[in-house]
Amino acid sequence: MLFWAANFHVVKITLEFYSPVSVAALRFFFGVVSLFLLVYLRFGNQLFKFRFSAKEWWYMFLTSFFGIFLTIYFFNLGLKTTSAVNGSLIIATSPAITAVFTFLFQRKKVKLVQWIAIAISFFGVAIILVKGDFSKLAELQFEIGDMYIMSMAIVFSLSQVIVSKYLPHVDVVVMTTITSLMAFVLFAVFSLPEFITTDVPTDLSFWSSILFMGVLGTGIAYTAFYFCVVKLGATTSTLFMNLIPFFAVLLAFPFGETLYAVQLAGGGIIIIGLLLFGFTKKKK
Image (tube, rainbow, N blue to C red):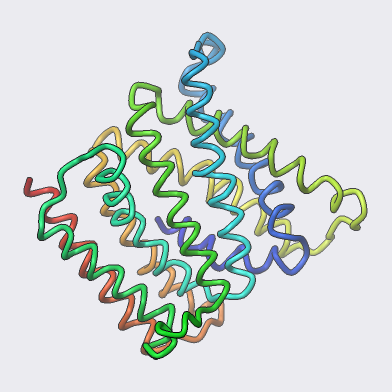
């Protein structure tokens, strides 16, 4: 969670040199390399014996498209204009959005108290989106960066439903490696013109940030998260995502970001809603 939270700050450094798509392509190049190394260490030559049906490949592509390609694109695009703290607080609503999607597409029952918890979390997001001025809500005046991050939360949550409904039997680490490779190919195709026409950055801060996001923020972070899913279960592991905005707020100080009272208020309400939702889900 610390590495994922740091991504919200580190990506801003890289976006000063390249477009959101090109930054994502470089991040996932190193991310895929590190993931393949981790998977090979786990499975050895057995890795190349995995076989999947056409439907499984299709659902992995959808997972890659929504859960990685669009998710990271909106992530990078949003953080060009919004703050890392705002972004981390908004994306923290993903568990609540996922619950709405599972209700709509999988008809999973959601208790009344869980709906209340979801509403509380969304209210916290609304406070952040309108910066405490609810007259903006009536006029639909939102910061474009915040809306991109909200879009990220939606497509990421949709991908979670695809995985849970169609790919629960596939090894999560192998699936993460394959879907990351698919996303890298998409990013590479769209970023190729920029790579051809733009000089390669020589700034150390750029490459150290790319390596951080690729190796630690992608390869290690995803592997550690899915290890927790296997050992602790999805519900308990998802609750740890609530630590992302906490760490992002702590990292705001060394990265020189200013914290505002409205962010703390909205973030606090989001966390209260998510904790209430997680508690009722665990109690069930």
